[in-house]
Structure formats: C-alpha cells, structure tokens
Amino acid sequence: IYNGRILRAISGFYWVKTDSGVIRCKPRGVFRKNKISPVVGDLVKCSVDGSSGTILEINARKNYFVRPPLANLDQLFFVVSACSPSPNFFVIDQLIAIAENQRITPILVVTKGDIAPYDFIADYYKKAGYKVFCTNEMNEEKVKALLKLLNGKTSAVCGNTGVGKSTFLNTLFPFLSLDAGETSEKLGRGRHTTRIVELFEVGGGYFADTPGFSTVVMDRYGNIPKDT
Image 1 (cartoon, rainbow, N blue to C red):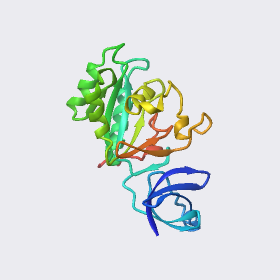
Image 2: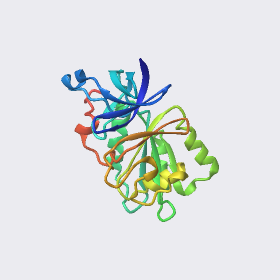
Image 3: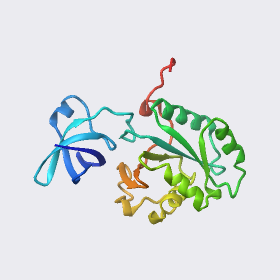
Image 4: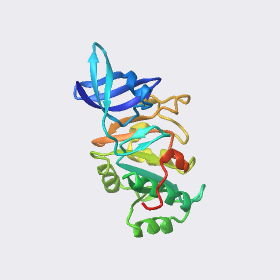
C-alpha cells in the first residue's frame, strides 16, 4: 500500500506521486457507487499490481473545488491587471472571500503597472493585510521572495483572460516561455487539452496548471453560509 498525491487526471486514470515514483491508477468501483470522484490534489492510498495501481482510499480534504476539479489548495494567486481589462474589485473580493472560506491564503499579483497607475490597487489590498506583488517591480530579490512562498505549499493561479497570467508565470518559471494565451507544451498541454488539471513540482511545492478560476460561479466554488 502506498500513500501519494494525485498529480494528473485524464479519462478516468489518475497519476499518483508516491515515494516509489508516479503510478497510473484507476479508482475502486465503490467510489462511483458512492458518487465520489478522486481529483487532482487528493491525498490517497493506492495498491500496485504490476505497472498499474488502484486508488483504495481518499483522505479527508482540506478544501475542494468542483470546477476546476482540484483539492487541498494552500494558496491562490489572484492576477489583476491595472488596465485592459480594468480591475473588477467586486469579483476580486468575492474570490478572496471564497478562498478564505476554503482555508486558502489569497495572494494578489498586479500586472501592467508599466502602462497604467497601479498603486491604488496594491495599497488597497496591502492595507487589508494581503501579500501583493507587482510584476513591473519584480527584481531578483522579489522573485526569490515569491518563489519562497511556494515551498511546501500547493498553489494555483487565477485571473480573467488578458490580465497577464502568462507574464506572471514566466516571471516565476522562465522555462515555460509562455506567450499570451498559450498553454505549455512542456507541461503536456496542447491547445485542445486545456480542460486537464495538473500539478507540477516547483519551488519545493506544487503548482496547479489549470484553465479554471476565472469567473465567480458560487455553485462551483462553494457557497458561504451567512453566519460564517
């Protein structure tokens, strides 16, 4: 029996990272019977028979998202542009509230500060107690500080189309060499496989490569009770 973390899910198969390597697994039939599906990020127990394995048990989740299907996030990077598109503070605040309700640390990343004023965005959220990074201020020291946040954590990035997610990801991971709107072939992503969620190891932690987390749909991310 092995303990592991699901890194990728495709067509009913799950790639589980264990101390003995990555094992391709299928879930036990009882999961379907109980209407439970493993998702990327799940901590699981699995058995191995030859070159394939079986997921036997899914550990209790810290948090869970329906779309994108992802579990056990520690932090979420919100990418916001100073212009084109202009920041929608209502949506940002909703996403931050959802993250905190799911016990996820929100971190703000402001892009396009070289072409439009951005201080008002950064100051607003810094005063509220959140970590804020501005891509146009990035130097080696600040990049190291940002990468240090990934150590031992499972993270993901979110932001609407055009806000500069690729710019941010290239700042963190230059080896990706992403163009605007491009998905990473180096991570096994083709233009027709953008619905695949995957964790990749970087900076001593895991980072979710996912097409989700763009707009607020409460039934996807979990309703927040009024008394919370």
